[in-house]
Image 1: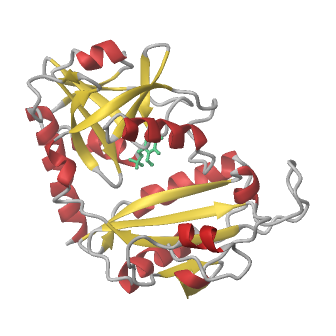
Image 2: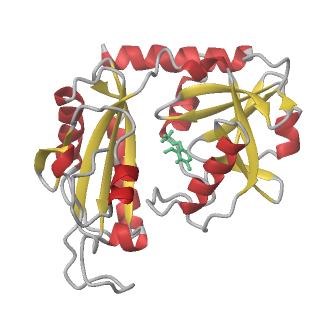
Image 3: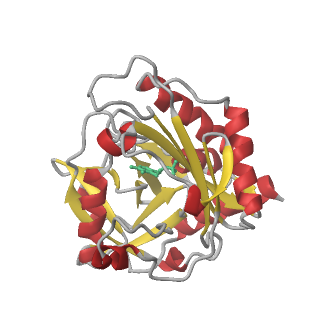
Length: 305
Ligand code: PMP
């Protein structure tokens, strides 16, 4: 992230805003134009800045190609519909932009982020009369096939303090920011959120446990995001020789499970080998988790090569 120099920032603040690592300027896309990240700006009156009034998607780039873009764009359409936000462009156009960003930025493994907001308007909670959505996207590299976390991560248990429409991929994510920061401070990679002891999902992933050879994941409802990766895992479960039951489980059951794993578009399938101070199973990635990860990766290769 590059913040342009501005004489209006006091010097100390300017120093804080400086990127800590040298980064080359990416090509981003905003409201129809490809621009350098230094020129990719939204208004302070944008409703996503003021209210978190926007929705987004993150899709993986694998072998230089978008993975499951169609499914991500169907979910984006749904998120927009659920918050009565007019689509700024067709899914085909947005998919073309996302692929072009991966290509222009030379990304072979990574992700593309796309956000649609209810645009800039005088600050008022109710919608403006004439909504002009803001839409922008950027890409970034990330190791996916050789993820350093594939050998196992720790999760940190936190109460789920979010709202009642977690099925909408909203940009209003303070609860997840706090959950994931608490996880980081606890030396964990991800949060395990729960409601009255029942696991909902990760801070930015879906959660699964394995008991006696059966994989369990919470059924879809307004309490969780319908993860694309979760869905793909259901699709490849037969190939992975994994039986799946969509049933909620408790934190206690997760701690006592044989295996636990998370799924998300940008981590695929990652073994959870620690839940706070508890070791899951024998502390190593379990066979069901590894078969699911392998089947997911095999499909990703098939779709992108
Ligand atoms: N739940 C939440 C809260 C998330 O933010 C994400 C990541 N988008 C997921 C689940 C996983 O969804 P997906 O597999 O589509 O990335």
